Length: 60
Image (cartoon, rainbow, N blue to C red; front, side):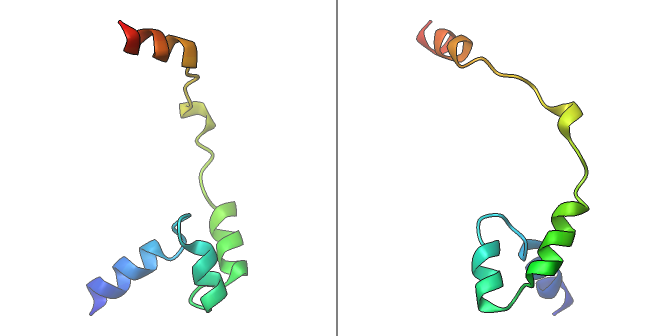
């Protein structure tokens, strides 16, 4: 039972279903806000992508 509970908890704030979970009451807005606030800033790992370069690569 613990594995199922842990898996469910890990998905509670999944961006695809978090609004539904909040509406249904299985997640609280305050908990979600704290979760988002506590996320690490990953901006240093971002990479700029040129759409033109991608299109040129695909047409070759």
